[in-house]
Amino acid sequence: MQPLSGHVMVVYTGVFDPVHLGHVDIIRRGSRLVERLVVGVGENPEKTPFFTLDERVRLLKEVTAAIPNVEVQPFSGLAVRFVRSLGARVMLRGIRTTSDMEYEFTMSLTNRTLDPEIETVFLMASEAYSHLSGTFLRQIAVLGADLDKFVPAQVIAALQARAKEQRK
Ligand code: ADP
Image 1 (cartoon, rainbow, N blue to C red):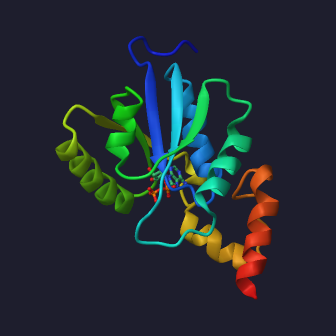
Image 2: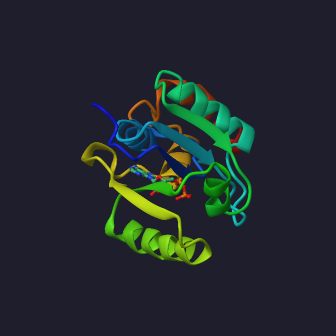
């Protein structure tokens, strides 16, 4: 599929702690709509992450290596500033449920207040992945669940190892 003309670059921002199949689905679908999709990996100042920023970036790079127009970059601070620093105008986010909707709506309005020239566009989660969330993923990993239905193959070993450390 040819990218839509005029839609040069979008920036998909998130914490990705760690990247799971729901994120990958949004990345794949988003990458088909634009020439270049940058995955921006940020920090959540309110939470200590399961994986460090470097680890999250590395996992995302491995998982997206086969998609030629996707690149992964870490950022700190405000997402809108990161988007602007790339010369982009469009942020991409995924929405799973109506509760996400409220959160994402508030965040997009906050971001628009911070930088009125940057728009957020949303893709609805695919049915198969709409139940996936980082919080539950980390919980079931610590409890020893099989992870292959939740995360890409490249993430399984890293997540199992980190979960094992957390059980100690
Ligand atoms: P954040 O903590 O900033 O919400 P996440 O890494 O959890 O970051 O998610 C990044 C983006 O991916 C968000 O827009 C989120 O709604 C979306 N997302 C998370 N899980 C899924 C999923 N299962 N399907 C589709 N989109 C998702």
